[in-house]
Length: 210
Image 1 (cartoon, rainbow, N blue to C red):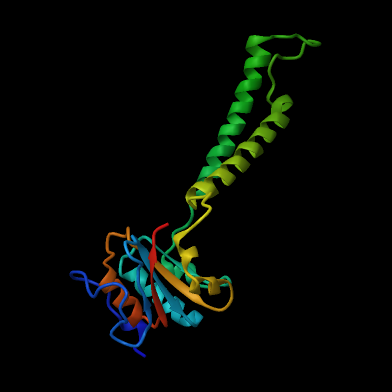
Image 2 (tube, rainbow, N blue to C red):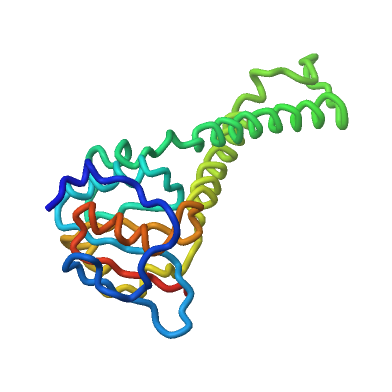
């Protein structure tokens, strides 16, 4: 088997047609009649092959792709080039917004809209309003985290084209996969299929849209 770390990225015009067996002996499943291509799914048997292939796909410049494993794989995020999530910034913004709105709300109610003098105390005092500020800070931060997580992961999504694949079910057992979507600017079915074959995959599948 060729060293996947020495493979080059796909390039040039589209290659061989969908549904054929590749240049080697790797099985390739094709599209049904009239099916629209969602992407290509490549199967790998070991963690090392998955990590090496992920590095090559990352270095090839693909943007719309993913790696799938039955358990957390140490180093996979780095191999895929995944950037630090922006979710903490969203949570921080939500918390600051909630705290500021709580303080503004209580100031307006107690010091402007409905002044009520109690034993000579000031109409507005920050220490007296801390509990509500704390509650709304936590509430807005939690809602931002929940909503941001759903938005960044394109959820809720009740079905995915990969669920059509019978072999993909083994990603919860003992197999590892890399999927590259057809919407990727660098995607061309023939060259991408040949590229994945050279990375050590044991099976290639062309996945249809829903």
